[in-house]
Length: 102
Image (cartoon, rainbow, N blue to C red; front, side):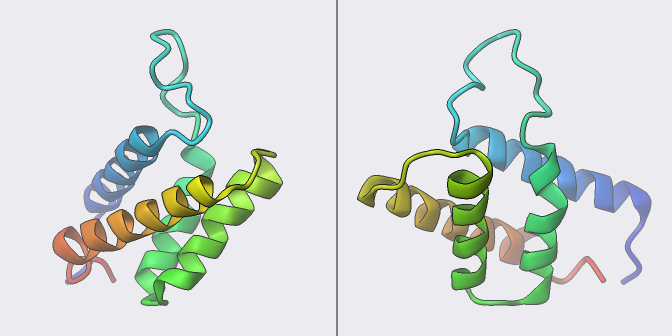
């Protein structure tokens, strides 16, 4: 199936919603905080999902973003959160987009 611009935008919008729900820096509950806080991570996230790589690559990317880019602290709970979010992204992608995007 050929990917249309509308399909790509819808997919990225859904990934944005998932990132905002995960909200690793904890700002989405602030009413006046911009909803585009995590937009720079959407396309790389989609590329990893599209590549069919295992969860390890996605978890490593989430670690890079949260630890190196956002400078958040690492902990067992932070690792568990990354793993859970990676699994959620993989599940969402496989159930909603895997066979629709080329």
